[in-house]
Amino acid sequence: MIKKYNSKYFNFPIEVENENWEIIVKIFTENKEEIIYSYYDLEEKTSYSPYIKNAILASFIWELPKNILVLGFWAWSYAKYFKDYLWQEINITWVEIDSAMIEIAKNEFKLQDINYFNLDYFEAIDILTKKKKYKFDNIFIDLYDQNSKIPESLNNTDILKKISSLLTDNWKFTINYSDFEENKDFYLDLEKNILKALKNKEKIYLLAWKDDYSNVVWVYNLKERINWEKLILDYLSNVQNWLINYDWNLISKIFVK
Image 1: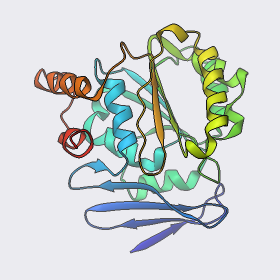
Image 2: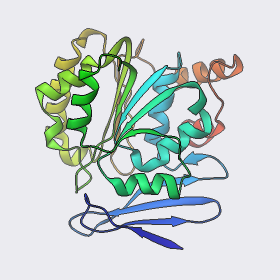
Image 3: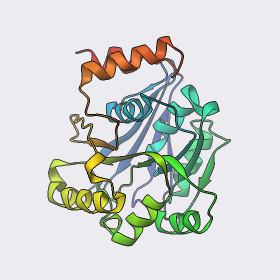
């Protein structure tokens, strides 16, 4: 059964197919191109999006954060993943402009107890920076415009400085560069300004992963430059020591080729 949610942000309704064991969320671009924006397997508790899991794994490999800020909901696969594995151990603040996405979260993914701002990220960041109590160990950015690209408005020195001011001393910063190859020049310019805002260029390392949709996730300020083999070993070691929650899908479906 397909449900349609009218969005004030997208020109076409968001379609949600919710079966007994999976949820698929689809959006449509201005050119009427269909994009599977989110997929979650309710039985295996995993998302189709490898870059989401890679970002989580890379960011949490050494320690679990206490507070996370997520700009954009990653169509709820990410939120559902947190709910299934990490929700009770970390505080998460979500920012989402589209009220339809919040309806989908509550109606389809059954995520009722979320702490969110239903605002444009500019407005939300202004509120967070004015209230001194908000500091985050991890900030995840997954913002899209109508054509599945990071909004050009994010490439703004003032807003990037405000975002970086919300980070604690022991921080990670993760960004999903959607359709990287098609927007490479813009994204490289954005990254240059992100590096300036973070004021920590000499300590920044990248963990990049590209899937068939040309999404690239870069995690900044990892403790060291790592390869997949070491990432897996560190992950398994932490799992055995019960330092992070165990998800076999991270290993069997993504890293073991």
